[in-house]
Length: 273
Image (cartoon, rainbow, N blue to C red; front, side, top):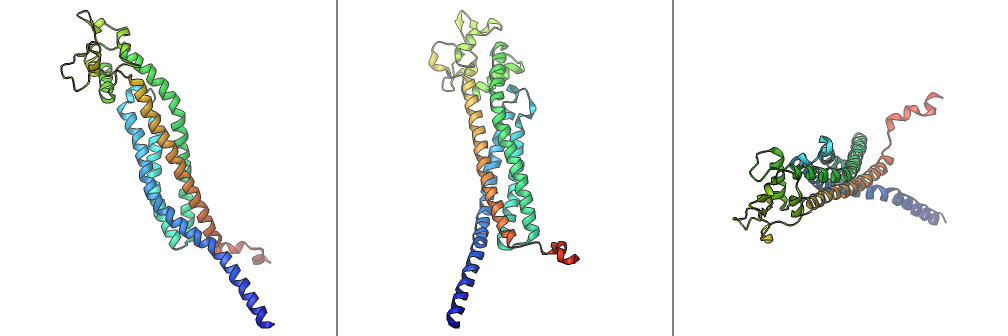
């Protein structure tokens, strides 16, 4: 009977030990895996931030506010912090140091704040940027002074049309409605800027006829498509990385549960009894 009782107690003890240890083992493994994933996520997040910054740098004259690149800088900052966070997650999974666990929780909290701010700002600026691009493009088209003009506004229009391979706001017909000087009616023929010409037609001078020599798609749609891609990439990248960071935080909390702060036991009531 004693032998049976001892075997039952041993089985219960082993069961409790198993139930007590498998969450810790799983938390260690998940934190180790997330530590390596964070390094790749940092590259993806930095790529999205750089895309936002470069888009503002290349087409900044179409935007009125200088702080529209803020989501990109927040994403880059988060990517830089994410690298040491991944290293720290690997160390915590290997050796549960309470100081490293506390530092990891602090970094994860900072990262969640940065990424949430970047995602929200990127979504908030989308509508505003679309409106600003349309109004600014309309102004630049109206103020265009001819193909050979040295004005900054005219050069900006030419740069956009060459880089995006587009013509006008909605299409090439916008140039025929321009309110500036009648440069587009040279020699009785309707013309558009030479930046609307396709590269494979070196002799194109902007004449509407023949039409196949010109880019016929408007610049506004291409700009909006580029903006939508960048913002969507930023939003989902921040969302996915944020979910991974929450998983890392939960794993770290599980490990902290099995690694209590023994130095704080002086607060126990028994100490003062």
